[in-house]
Image (cartoon, rainbow, N blue to C red; front, side, top):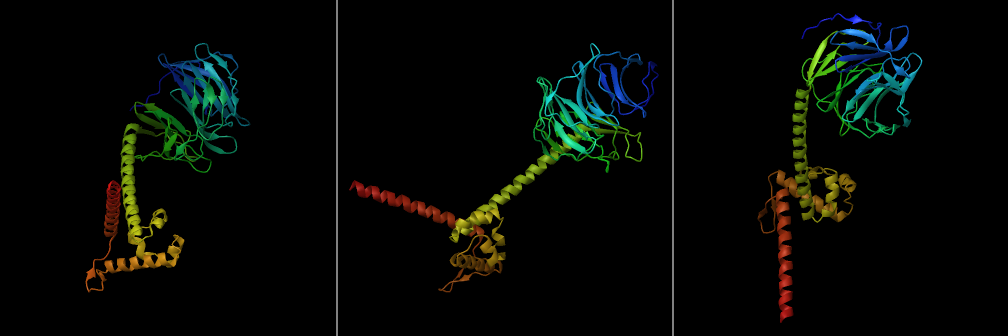
Length: 403
């Protein structure tokens, strides 16, 4: 990678910060910002083929002067949302038709998102996804959806914009939602929206979140390599499947460093980690089902099957039975003296099993110590015997009727 500073001609924009810049073909459209003394609402266009600046003469109602707004290209229109100056914060929408250089302000209705600056907006299919920002008093981490056909807002917890109907909606999202912040970036890459950095006035962040815009689920994948320092007011450009992060500041320093993140590798590692997690969950579930089956069989052999559901819910396994006290049994609902005596008898036999002892019978022989598997097998044999006896009784009954 090599930096260069091209020579430009034409009417150069004045110095400014907090402006927006959007690429339209081979041209860059720059709007608004502030120069430290005043806020601006002028529009400048850079032709990257001739490297010539021009100040656009626009028609219609221009947005008020502002900075830290968003500027998003949709087809042949540029949407400016929010922003503010030293005394006001906006939640308005302005649209610039780039074919005619004409501004218009759609008449949005419904439950409008709160006014904000330092937020982000990104396009996904037929939606605009708005996230976070600052409303003049507090940081935000909400998302919103605007239906562009009806120009109706709805105020949910989180959402995106359906471009055809101009109506905002706010579906509930899931996953690990980023902390409230402003001055972050959001970028679309490989059907993911990626939030990076920002700050909340007390902390500067260097965390990264992936938002699945179809299911509205946030995730925080593990990222390898030398990560950028915490920063806000930086820029991010998507190139192929890479995020190129440049500049920003942390409140005490300003950066001019450059970082590149391979999104495809992050997704690959995240997918592998998810598969491993699901595999572990299946193993844990299988072990849990096995333990549930064993405890049910053992309690059934003692005539205490009605307590099996409670034992399973409290995650009591066969191995834990010797550890249960009278108080535990009462908490588990084993309230009758007979049931507790039956349980103690089993625990005594189980303890003898652990000591390698059997149960001494009256004829002098030693009965093998009971185990969970023995009880399970015995229960199965008894059920089979009951079924056989039942079938035999039915057969005898039929023979008696024939006679």
